[in-house]
Length: 296
Ligand code: GDP
Image (tube, rainbow, N blue to C red; front, side, top):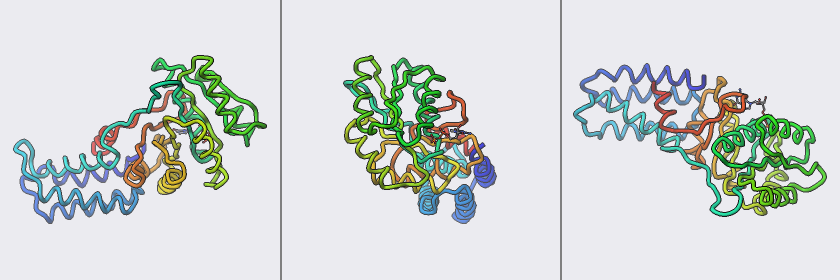
């Protein structure tokens, strides 16, 4: 499970503080040195780690003593709060359109898990009583259209495609019309993935975005790629102004650094995480629960 190592290390380090009736500046310094190493090992962005440790130190040393907590517990509470803050405090929900169908534009590099995530999200929305439509806009790989169709059938959500001869902009416009006619109130647009960030792809995404005016532009990122995921997020955000991230493969042995860095680096929330290949393995991301899970 992701964060296993980080979790062990932080629990071990902070455990030493727990019972202390008095915590000196030196104790805090020592603990923070270990926290810093543990975070760096988990592949958390260097600048993010530096800021994190600095904030925890300042708050710990200046902290008022709460009667119900020992000073050691106080430091642990501060670490928990700052870990939560790092990931964004509380869950960030999808944006739903006030009028007309809600449009969710999905983007990401090939292999990140975009196709499966589209299926998972559609399934979740359907379960919540929405009437989603899945739209295939990856016109470069016929196999991608087929794969998405199979996923749609799996989750029993209607599927819209126009083959690979029509431009993604025209497909997405036609899909919106189709949704309006057929009573689909959420349109999930799957777009082409590439192996690397590519200007042609970005231009195309910008055009689809401009013509569909999505309520959410979600970037699907593979947690296993660590710092690369953070760089990809920065790039997509600069070009496309994303509204959130879906972080995949958190069930694997990813070190979790991406989950801890993305919000701080891009200021964009992680809205969902996926924890397996099955269609129901998508969860709303709760920063506070994740922080508590890490700290045990
Ligand atoms: P795409 O190229 O971005 O559309 O990626 P796919 O949806 O085809 O996913 C690539 C691979 O990652 C597939 O084998 C998926 O089953 C797998 N995958 C996607 N999400 C997860 C996840 O949360 N956990 C695990 N273990 N595998 C995943």
